[in-house]
Image 1 (cartoon, protein in one colour):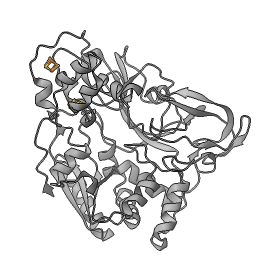
Image 2: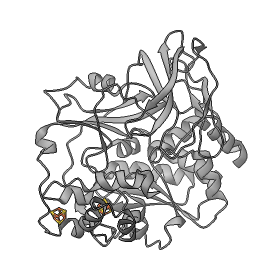
Image 3: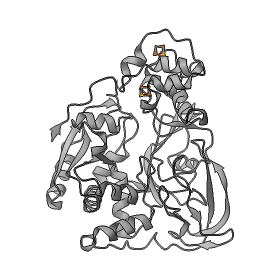
Image 4: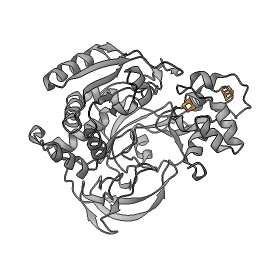
Length: 431
Ligand code: SF4
Ligand code: SF4
């Protein structure tokens, strides 16, 4: 295993990892009602519903068809009846139609012996068509995978990085997939490589990956005949983000990097090899207020409250429910918020973990500047924003802010820097 040198400026040490008991990943119970959000991100284009209220649908049946670039097919995660199609506001704050399916009827996918197709005889166009039909998205960004694969294939010479790094102290999903489904991750990578044709492939892993898993991965990579090297990275937030990975690999032009995480590769594998649409998502459910933290394979549209119940429920009253991680995640008020194809973690955090405190005036300690990996001055940018000088904040680098959250984490005055940067970038006034 080659040791990557790490990124240069800023960052926060994340040596501590919340203990996690590795083991088989359970299928979550099927939700009685699945609310399927049609638009995965604020930038996605909404697909057209192809079902109507009262219609019976099968598990995996098309609910909405892609409306072209930036849009993906959406399938029913459960068999049932379409009860409602209506506009909803997502936890991220943008509007999207959602389709509510109530569980009823029999299963076409679940309980059946999985089909397995020999994909090696398929050509690039066949694979791209399957990925598009099955509505596979890149889990970390919500972009349609078929689009980004074909866009990559037209620009040769790039490095494909299988990103199993998780700098968040809680999350383990990507690393667990390397341990539980290593063959499928590597097979998914081979499928992606068949379409996109990278110049080289790097598997990016945590420096603390166990030698046993590393040994297994090496054997599988060797058997796959993929030209792939394993590189280990030290734990420093935000080492798992694209610019920091590029810098660590000494890639000057970030566009020469194509990053896919193991969970996306598993979804790709399942689509091409097992004919499965993207109707499931691996979700880490944890935090100090969860009785038995676990990774669950959940159906898209399941309420996050159901997943919490399956992990033994809440221990006491959580101070915050967060989708994503403590650095970059978003607090949600509603346990009915549903799992999407980009939900990677649900955390119920206690007040010992969130350490709530009122915002205090800036003491000009400079900690936010020291940790910013993009070399920005977060407090100066915030001051400009709060003075209504959005253009000046952009000139000071707001557009280069990656919302990594390091500045807010480091701030002793509990100033919600990243929350305000995100809101400013999303606001119409600054577009
Ligand atoms: S959130 Fe933005 S300003 Fe804050 S540390 Fe990260 S890149 Fe810098
Ligand atoms: S870390 Fe907080 S208190 Fe220190 S300079 Fe930045 S905003 Fe001000």
